[in-house]
Length: 237
Image (cartoon, rainbow, N blue to C red; front, side):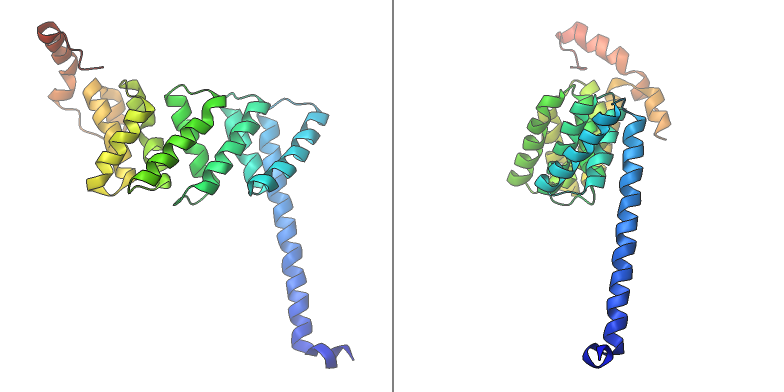
């Protein structure tokens, strides 16, 4: 009777669907377990603390529209940088929100890396993370570059730009201006990094990148002293 109602083909489809569902569940459990292992490596909570974290991760990941695995992996990334468990969880939520509201981002790692690079470079505290997200989205909404493109460029160049004395606002502005012509945020970010290193005469960093170190780079410090003496202007600021 069962065969007559559904047919052999339908029965096989049902069995295959069940098998795929079970395999998916098993894979998700493995990924979630791996994420928790990584989080445990970089935090020192009690057994109850980890249970509370899991409960919170389950609830918050649903609320912000992400998977528990992405949520926990992102928290582990921030914990590796020295954030305590609470701040790491807060930052993870911000990274997942950033990923959800941004365009042209392939995965949560891109938003996590962008926030890490930006906050580390410009010395931004955890509680101010949403100001970074707001800036990037605002610039993306008002210009032709995507928030994903801005994140890519700032990940590549934020540290060098900050060392050269630029603020996050100035760095975003330079990325937008450069991208108007180049139309390649990754190249713009790398280019700004190289320019910053050349202006500061950072020979070893340039050599590590495979860039040529010419006499102009070596003489930057001498030019700085000469120009400062003649005009009172410090070209490094």
